Length: 336
Image (tube, rainbow, N blue to C red; front, side, top):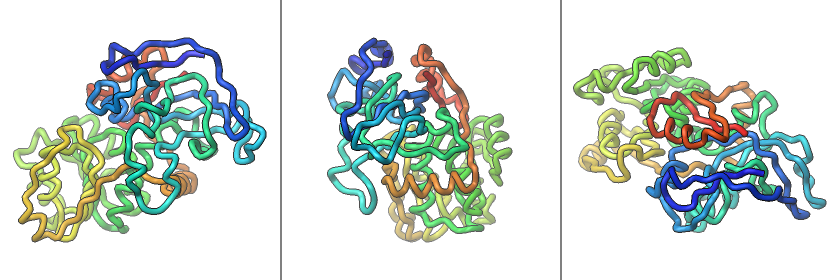
């Protein structure tokens, strides 16, 4: 079988390795992976922006495929089942804990192999059954981007009729748009691309704003809400954009911080934060229980993930270059 190995940080250090197909132990399953979906965290690991110091490693956290065989003690899965991966397998439910924080325990970041491999052995808590209306390519997009978007809205306790501001049109942003519309919310989307904004409008966005065409983005958002501000922000950009999100927020509104594309630090006006009684939550994907709740909504509404580009395994470097360019709308997926 083939797998992609990162020998050291740097996109040019991704190499294809050929090895023997593994076999599952009594409590494991063997999955023939068919797709791996890219997230910014994968690019950050490959470029060394995020590093656990463990190399070589098999990158990419999210994937999906078909169960090929199961160990003698496995009852939850059987050959032929379509499954998707779980990003934080030890987190079943309840409160996030300090032992769940280390990146090296997460797939594709160091000690635990990622999904850029034709076959992989999993423990039963490391995968989930996939809704029957989804393909492997679609299911691969769910573990990080889907669960993150779901919790970004859940932590803000969004209600029908409220307004959600979402920055950008990447994977988490577009899942956020889809879920927010399921919740009955009004959605404002920002982007620098008129074409992407039109695509977002076609998916149900109520208001779209090209931030490059506006002198003051927060003023424009306030105008779009009649001066009231938004109830919830899905903050995918980070850096100085976090202050723009705060300025766009109504009193006692909420910001779910899910990304750091423009920087990992931010300066906030604390007087404004206090006067508005705003809340901020850092979203680190979610638990298995969160995943199950999201899958229930996806199943009930027959929701289809939006995939902006698909690359074959042999074009993995091109896939990452495309992700880094920011040209994608929705998710970027590699197929085997």
